[in-house]
Image 1 (spheres, helix red, strand yellow):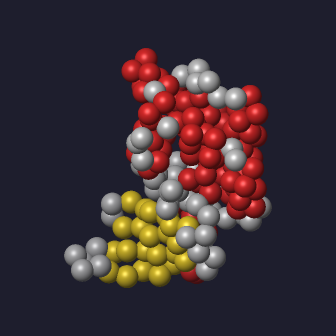
Image 2 (cartoon, rainbow, N blue to C red):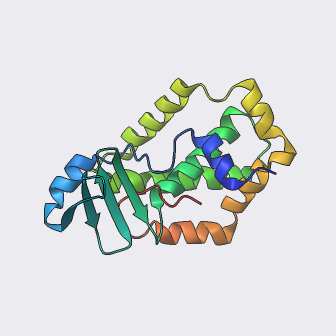
Image 3 (cartoon, rainbow, N blue to C red):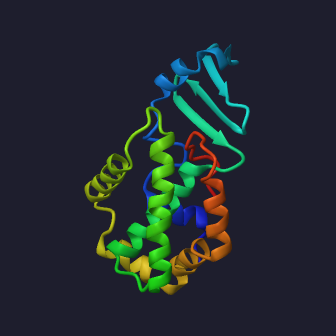
Length: 187
């Protein structure tokens, strides 16, 4: 069985940490009073923004990375969206109740990400962007779908775990608190 982190990378196609719904320059500007600027050992400028709720963003010349040690809601959205896309695009034999739960979690997590994006966006905009990116990637090749349907890969087990009532309750609880939709740590 492949590991969940590998499965996530396979499903989502983007590295954890790449939050396309966050304009980091705008974020730093909006919270400039909380930004601490230092110089690293290489002499490069590093900006760090700590929201005090477990969410931090660190930016340097290579880009920005967000961390949320209490509930990386961007990761939740990406996992649910990736599982939902694989189930749909690869016509996986997902039980109807699990499929309905994936659909509900996709919208719930997506609405949270859209509302907490920088700048905030409409859910319909994020949904359309996600679906457009999905179509452009053309990741769901016959080979990919055959791998997803392989029982040894564990995708159906992963879907069952994400749609388990206790996991759903935890996800719903995490999404009650408005917070920057960070991807890290993911899984």
